[in-house]
Amino acid sequence: MNFIDDDTAPTPANPARRAWLRKTAWAAGAAALGGASLGLPGVRAAAAGDLKPLKLSWNAGAICTAPVPVALKQGFFEKHGLQVELVNFAGSTDQLLEAIATGKSDAGVGMALRWIKPLEQGFDVKLTAGIHGGCMRLLATKTSGIVDLQGLKGRTVGVSDMASPAKNFFAITLKKLGVDPDNDVHWRQYPATLLGEALKKGEVQAIADGDPTIWTLRESNHLQEVSNNLCGEYANRVCCVLGVRGSLVRKDRAAAQALTQALIEATEWTANHPAEAAAIFAPNAPGADVGQLTAMLQSHTDRHHPVGDAFKKEIALYADDLKTVGVVNGATDSERFAARVFSDVLA
Image (cartoon, rainbow, N blue to C red; front, side, top):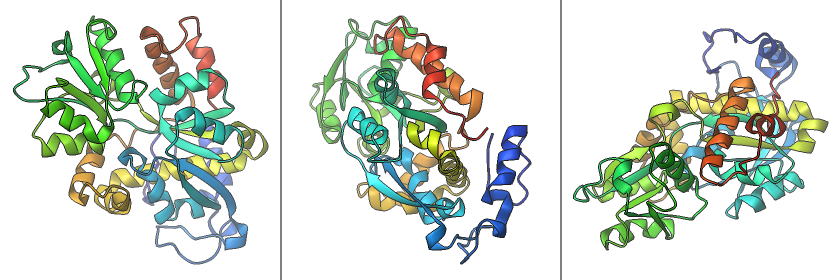
């Protein structure tokens, strides 16, 4: 279900969602929120003392997290009664999920294909919504002769780490095409900033990573985009997700609801205003100009931000995918796993 910041938006079809929206600031207006206008249609800020403080972890260098600073800058957090502190987290995914589970952070935004394995190990973090799809790409030189994923057989692919979402994603898609990602393709790790150099030197024949790094390399080095996570069955599959501390979901469900709704609305706003969203995000990507960032956002599926059963189904599908390449335990019941790590806070 999409949410837009337009007064003409249709009423959500989900009755449970309608009931919840009626109970929130989205419908309650001044009865719940008062104070200075934020410049958004029908939005008024709560008095500072009424805002619930939360910490949200994110990767400030990843364009797919653009809705996070958008939600802060455009007042979506305040609209839903939250005072959100953004924490730029550069550690491992295990460290991030541990920080959320133990209360050092209240929530985080990250990539499903990086989070599912550690979530399988039992971190007390609940996925509450998908944010968008797109942003992973595999590139080769135009003279390499690599025009599709099957062309990677016997070749070496550069990745930023061996558990990166891009490495996992393209391993999955290779497997589905009948190419063994472990034996038919070689993977070599480089710092993301050196992937282009590795390709130029011939140390690898293709590179895979996420935006903005991979987009910038494609444009600056005139590379060919062989594949991405915007095609086939993944054209309508989320890749970036919101995870909330399990204890927050259980003890303060209203705060988890508010955070989830704020980010969904910010994501829809990003889809409707890509240039403005790019300008808000730009300070976090000094190597890319606003025009490039706008084009990246336009290529992503920011209108695809599933919740409820639709999101739970996508989690299960990714778990199934990761089982095929040995990342998730083959004995794991994907549907039961999805039900365990997901929480429908908007129901």
